Length: 77
Image (tube, rainbow, N blue to C red; front, top):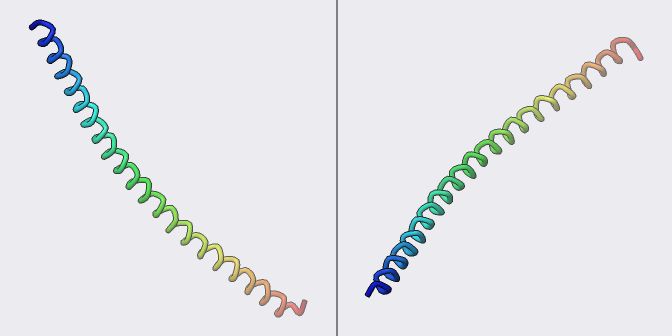
């Protein structure tokens, strides 16, 4: 009788432990998904900024080229 009680208690603790681990893993999974979403948002923002700066830099380069052409034309070089 005592052995059966101990076995039942051990099984209960073991099952409870597994349930606890499953709950904690589920919470970790949810946190990981949230972090991945945050990371994706940051990457998307950085990508948009990169595109914006690329356009700005290209516009600057084009403007400098036009200015240099105008300078050459006006000075007769």
